[in-house]
View 1 (cartoon, rainbow, N blue to C red):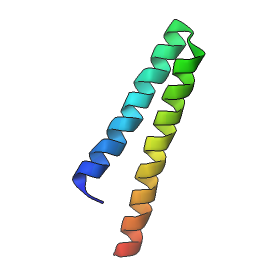
View 2 (cartoon, one colour):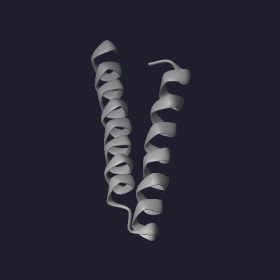
View 3 (spheres, one colour):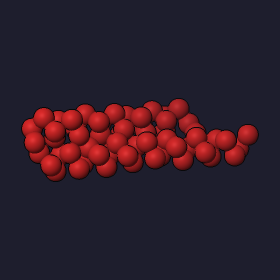
View 4 (cartoon, rainbow, N blue to C red):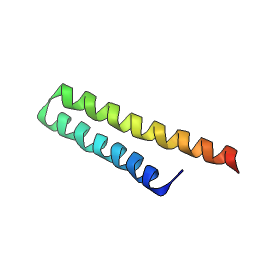
Length: 57
């Protein structure tokens, strides 16, 4: 897992959290869904990379 890839995954999860909260604030369900999917996707990618790293050791 490279540092750049780790940063991109964390940034995607963070962007998702912001988008989801913005959607809640504005009561925009589309933004909430997009934010939730970005957040989950970023966290899932981080978990996969951590699992790959554990098996490489």
